[in-house]
Every structure is written in C-alpha cells, then in structure tokens.
Image (cartoon, rainbow, N blue to C red; front, side, top):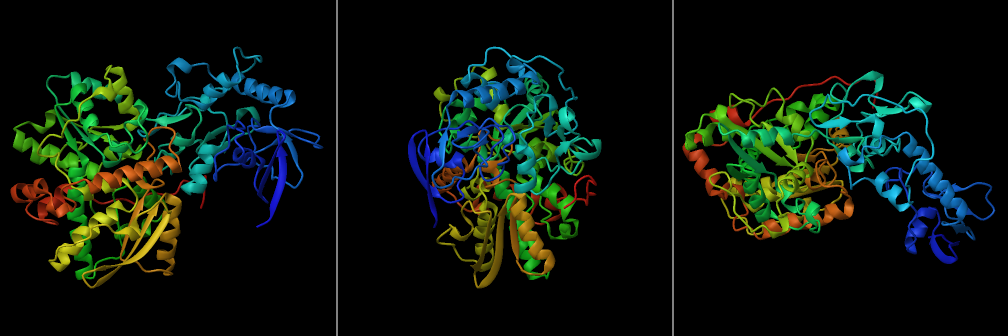
Length: 579
C-alpha cells in the first residue's frame, strides 16, 4: 500500500495514494460541504460547492475529484473558499423556485440545509428563470425540473447502480434538464419506477406520487370499508421520521397509528408473504420434478419485473407466475375476506403501506384485477404514511403496542424476512425442505443467502437435492447474474432478485436518507423480528392453512392460479438510451 502525507487546515493526515482530498478531510473530522457528490456513485466535481484552496494551485479545486498527493497543503475555510461556495450557492438559488413551505422536501432538503449553513438570507442575483412542466405521467414518480440543481445524482444511480439509464441531461447550457430522452415522459420511458432517484435527489426535483388525499377521502366515506396492509420492511423504518433509530422494530405502534387514522381493519402483508411462499415454493418443486423451466426467478419486486420486461424479455418464462405479496393480499381481501365478512367487495378499499414506489405502478397494472376489481386501490410509501400521521396530530412515540386484526394479520418469521435481500429465497427454502423431505428443518437460518453483498451464490442441500441458488439486489447486480444465465456461463435452479439495493429495506419509498449504514441497521431489525417469531415457516401459518382449507383448496390449484398467479409482457426498449 502506497501512502501519502498531506496537510489539511494545518493538520497532517496520511492516506492511501488515490484517496480524494474530500475523503482525507473526513478522516480527520473536517467536513467539506458537497451537493453533487454521492459516495462510490457520483464524483464529478459539477456543483463546485466542495472547492478547497491548494497551495501552489492557480484556482480553487473540487475536493471530491482531487487526489491527495505527497506534501499537498490544503485549506478548506479561507475567505476565498467561503466566498466561492457562497457565490455558487447564490447562483443555484437564483434559478430555484422559492417554494420551501409547499415543497415535499421541506425541512429535509440538502439545498435548504446548505443555504441555512451558509447564512443565505437573500438571493443576490436576479434574472431569467428556466421553466419546465412537472412530469406527472407516472403513478410512481413525479419529476419537477424547476427544482433540479443538475447534480446528476439521479442519473448516476439510474445508470451505475440500476443500469437502466432512463434519464439523463437533455439540451445544453441554461436549457439543460434531467429527463428521459427524445421528449418522452417518465411513464413512456423505460424507467422501472424503482424510486432510487428519489432517495439521492438533494431537493424536491424527484419524488413519489402522492395518494394521501385519496386515502383520506376513502377513510371519510361511510360507505367504504377501508383496510390496510403493511409490508415487512415498513416496521423497521416507520419510526425514523419520529426520531427512532433505523432498524427499530415499531410494529405495534405502526398498527396503533393506522387504527387511529381510521382504518377499519389493519392487516399484515406478511400474511400474503407466507401465502406467496406456499405458491412459489410449490411452483419451484413442480418445476424441478416435472422438468419445468429453470432457473425459477422470483417475482416479488415490481421494479425488477418491469426491468425484465424491458431488458430481458427472453427470460420471462423463467419468472415465477406468482403475484407479489401486495397483489395476492388485494385479491384475497376482495374475495375470501369479503365473503367471510359479508361485505360487498365494491365497497372495500384496499390500501397498502409499502417501502416501494414501484408498487404504485404495479397496483395499476391491468393484470392485477383477478378479484373482479382493482385488487389494490392505493399505495402509500413510508414517507407518505409518516406525513399522514403528522397531519392527524398523532404522537407516534407515545402510542401503545397493538396487534394486527384477524384473519389476515397472522404471519411467520419467514414472511418478515421478505423485507431483506435473500429473505424470499430463505423463506422458500424453509418450506421446500420440509415439503420435499417430510422432515422437520432444525436450523431455519440459511446464512449463505444473507448479507448486503450485491450478488450471493450458494449450493444448498435440500434433503439430498443440490439446489444452485443466486441472490441479487439492485438491478445492476441482477444484470450481472442474468447475463451469465443468458450466455450459459452459469446454471442456477432458483434466483431471487430484488430491484433495490439490499432489498425492500432500501426501497425507493423509504425515509430519506437511506444509505448503506441505515440499510444494515434495518436488516438487523428484520432478522431480530424473525428470531422473535413463534412460527418461522410459512407452511405452518395457521391462517394460511385455514385459507386453503376453506377457500383455495391447495397450492397451485385452480382457484389459487386464478387469484394469485399472473403473467407479464415484453416491453419495447426506449430508443433514446441503449444498453
């Protein structure tokens, strides 16, 4: 390892050769402000907020792209540096709408925070403002170019992490906007609606489609029976907007908050996650025994589904035909539950709480109406629900712990781990092992598929059957795995793919910020919830057993195929961006 020694603000620091001045400063506790920088993803020196003064250099240097060299002397807080940063910020603000009070990112905006830090009290420069309409076409994501600071973080995460490249710089100079190419809308592009762009946007230029008003209206309608389901990953993140540490399991308070908002029944998506495992586990066994198409690829992540439709349509036969737990739940609510409760399904409103923006697009897919109605009516992200709780004046911290309603509130530990990458695989293996062998699985943890790595591979012994598995989280990692499948380089039996980094704990609808450290803490919370579960195998869920006995018959039966399974379609590539 080659080390260099430099001096920053009269402090000597030794770092590995190639380290940037920005990272060297962090090592000794010096914070250099940034706006466009995104660790390991976007270091382009575009915003010029991170400039520093280097002895001997003619101009100020962008520290995020400046390599540390031996003997370098750096100053991060000289009058020239402060004046440059402030001028740059003034110029950015001169073309920014001053709508902080009505902006979705108010009090959680990096530009707003930076303006406060630099003591900006007025904008020095007045002039022409660029103007572009807000792109409202997608149910999942909205794009407001007026609030864009051209940091290109969204472009970087879309291209480098997700390998979708749905958006990029269009036009030149003052007319530059970040948008899909050739004038297309977000809906008409090959955007997969994963929402990772919303997590990295420093302002309100990209945000989730908001369905709060529609949910409030449904709750206020006395003719409607409004039920809500909560996804596994939401229980370890909903506390964050109310001051809890990431990973805090807040299930009981979440249930209590939803009841106080006025929902008639509070159910758990974990119930239908167990149901998904029953269907997908048996589907895998059926394909193995009857020479079906392998590898079987999971179908729980709607961002991933749209990705395969655009980029790998030749692998659509490999997809599990199972709907996601969200959509299975909606179909069961408007059939089985409606029948049990004696409620006309046309009067049932099914709301989902999800960590995911792509779920909004999924709920509106024409394939998702097997109940005879739109199976899921509205989808709220964690961010939206937090806003609703605050609007209602509910003190989340002081809420008691409450339990889900029956019959769709019973679940297992296998269901809760759906919230992390590898969780679907592990839950399926727990069930597949016992179905295939007829024996009790003594140790339910499958460590080989756990962790935050982008791709995990293993050969798992399932009662003498060697199952070759792969787990990928993020669409860039999915591409790596699928390319080896298409080329024939590798053979797998079962592949789990989650569209977002680390799975649903890193979903595009989770609280901001969401980074690697926060995702790790949420993952720990998910596994702790699994460990505390009384039942940890999906096929042992008594409510799921009863559902099959009373209504569905058996896994992969006629009725379950009708309600719980679907098909997907090949979508054309958007011609503006090619991979």
